[in-house]
Length: 95
Image (cartoon, rainbow, N blue to C red; front, side, top):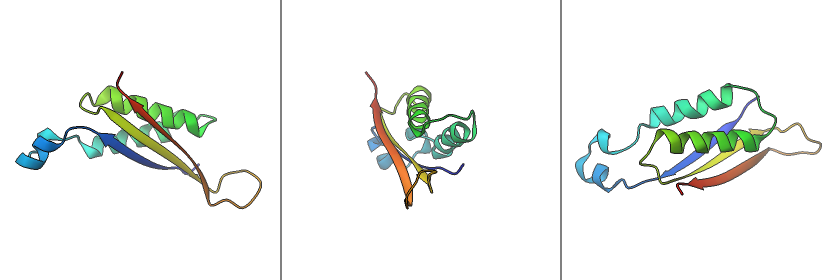
């Protein structure tokens, strides 16, 4: 199955912007790998499950991320009717 993932991570990036230092931001390649491994990993029945797993893993692996919004889009869903896609979006934050 094909999916598209949109991810927004909220964190303080002021130091990265001031210093131009990669160590003061998050590694976007690692974010991509998290999404890829979850989407291509264990099969699940619900788009909601993929969305929740991605959000949880991002918060676990990136302690500087205070909140993330994940949107998983399923193109050409297997439901009756003419739909370009369906999507689930959720926001998770640290307690």
